[in-house]
Length: 455
Image (cartoon, rainbow, N blue to C red):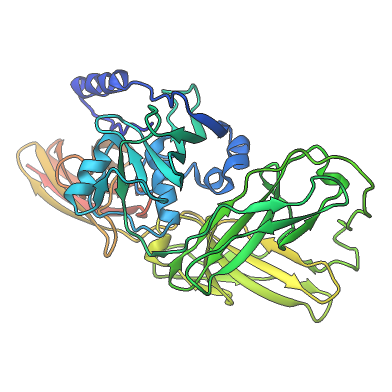
């Protein structure tokens, strides 16, 4: 669940905000089967490694951390859905606000749709549609569970956890693929094979990644995987990502296998980075300012032995956004996300190696802060406008300081979006004021200085 609360200066506002929190009832998926759940980042990673890596960032200007709207916004971003220019609000207003702005809302579930209930402050993401059931995923705010919780559920039609309406946002042309399966006996020495099924449209390239208890196994990125003693007692799964130029990439993961049993273990593959039978490489680094419209440059570092072929990919979260280049121009679709650069070194007869850079800071658009002052007897009124081109209206707070003393703080989302009016009581004389916009999930901070003369 998710509640959008604002800091309101008056006591009445605080009381109303508290009353809102009390009014929200927990949403229990009665009768649902919990397929996976997690509270800590580590446990969430076992269910959805992408969400675990992005949970603590704001998506579509929703509050970060455990809550349903931030999670659903993240999934829609991953599907290539652009952030709406209008405000969706709390979970209970997503459907009516989306419908008012031309988004289809009906009772028919589809993969990638947002599940909702009229009047209930909760939304979910539809991962799979069955004949009489859905596989859905959700996150819940800390007011429901003590620390918040991610869950993946199987719910049957007619149960309380089965949504009664579905919001169908449109993104890029989407790639479709079934839930993959793993063939082979989970026993040391045996080889597991990923069964991808049929993906559409034609020409989709598939990337494979094997996981042990939900964690990526370094270098295990082929269609097959031979089990070693390192896998004993763990459950294996395969994650497949489909990509095609002009389409939103899609990732599907299999159900985990039974725990791997022991057996005649094959020789353990070399893990020493100095071992001559493995491709060796440096962790790449990224330089540049992660602002929309600016360029980032990746340094691949040193790789060996000679003759190693390198392939490059730029990623936003789990999604590949560019490949084959070490230079990347930050786009509008990157707003609110973080970018990484991945290098894979290959050479015939050697074990390939993949290295990924640290993520950049959150990508934001550059904001422009305009302040228009008006003065009177003992007062100054500042009209503030925060603007950004080709991006959603900025949210967040504007603060006024005189020297180190804070005079006023206003919420941009109250009143006209992106604007604030700050009325200040000041002593007679000239005052130099610093007006600061703190930024939000997609817009960078900005500052302006203004001098006012109070009579």
